[in-house]
Image 1 (cartoon, rainbow, N blue to C red):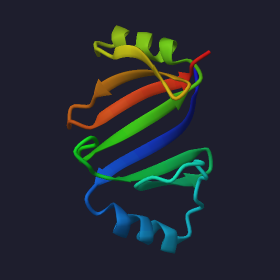
Image 2: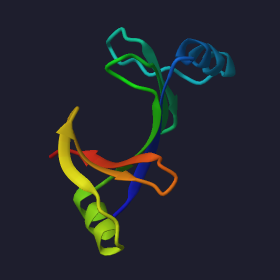
Image 3: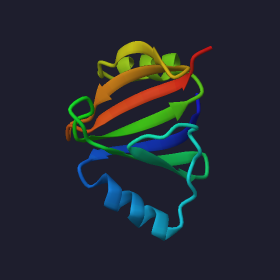
Amino acid sequence: MQVLSLRYSVVDTQAPSMIDFFTAVGLPIKDTGESSSGQVFLAGDSWLEIWQSTSEMPEGTMLQIVVDDADAFAELATSNGLEPQGPFSAHGEKIYFLQAPSGLNVTIQSADC
């Protein structure tokens, strides 16, 4: 079992100014091949996603933990008393959802093979 990267996602009304800020910092931009109300910034194998909040996408944050085997990590979480929800499949990934004690939304996800 191995953690491959982290993704931090922010959905906020201040997305345009946040995107300008991280562009000014010099973070490389990931080409997603689509125009949208957000931006993905690369940081090695990890990335930062910033999206404009809408009625379909409410404000919030999420930590996405990308692993080599989501099922194995979900089993470990369950054996440690957590209750991961899933798996779900989206964007070619297998995803389990958790919520940290602080309320932070967390996913454990891997390539959906």
